[in-house]
Length: 534
Image (cartoon, rainbow, N blue to C red):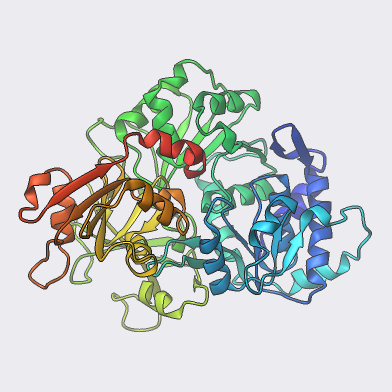
């Protein structure tokens, strides 16, 4: 069993030095050259005598970003990829919470972040990859790393306006990688169509597959976001065999009937995760790609990528959900009812997870960690931590786990996990745009809706301009309703359920003035980042 994910790369470089590791546009790099450049940059980082610390990356997805992430791993530290499309305020909040030792960026992006307080920049454009260096320092570092040391930090939405940094270790990534190889026919000849942005956990496991199975990563540029057929042409051009996508872009491809226009004979495995894949659109893929193995994976980042999977091996009617299946090997799923007792067959309950796949917690956030990572209520004999996902599921007659929805205010939208409380916090407490407000999610229409109290209606443009300065585009509400008074329940709290139900019946609110504003074309909004969401 591996201790450090970098051990995968050592074997791959030895066996396949001249094989192409990454393709990005007209550029490509072999495993040998990738390894040399990563080691040189790692030696430079190691000269600062830091280990097991976060190092951030502020770069677009590219060959350079892959080099940098591997270099950080070589140096014995944990990489944390930042979204270059996020408002600088959000980047600053993340930096202030995590306090990374360095931020690796380039000439194009350094000016955007140079004024963040306390930032220390490594400019990869100025680094001399031709310089000589002493690699022995890396061997010493690797000998000190154990499998529970942090491998990476992935940021996810947080209710206070600052994302939570989920700390994941080597053991959990190695475990997921090895279990995946056991469950699926993943070979040394895989060519990955890499669609997810650097900040997604999907990219991190693609990076592990690159190192562990000498898989070639084909980076799909975000300039193709508005042109799904061009994405399919790229898959065809590079003979892509493996996809791990969020369903958003797959739904668009199905709705546009693009698989009838492009032949993809080399595709053999498609995973999808991150949000519910509507069964009708999935069936379009299933029927058009008969020789492909499809798998629905499920899991929040707190349990390292995914904890269940369902290999689709039967016909599923359009009106039935695709199951999330069964637990990964070496992972245990607990479905607990409201009494924290095991749910019976078909009884709905909260999905909880135990095992070595669990994250180490949230970086510099012990309060949030203690709330989500708790003692197993079924075990009173010794300390055993489980993660409460907040997702409601049940087991059907076939013994398959079926996802029902969220327990709280956490949603999945366009593949991103979003805490609606964070949007409210920014709008009400930070920006003070309105007196009071409530954000709800219309799952059917995939719309984030803002209800707010104010004397007068605020224009959509004003909302979007102000919110967009602090939150990424995928978190900006697309529908706005002004009310004189937001409805309250018997406890005096805003009646979220009533507001959510009102999305299907605007007359159901009763009392008070009700005004509605809605952006006309969601496609126009989402085009620039549709690819990144998938």
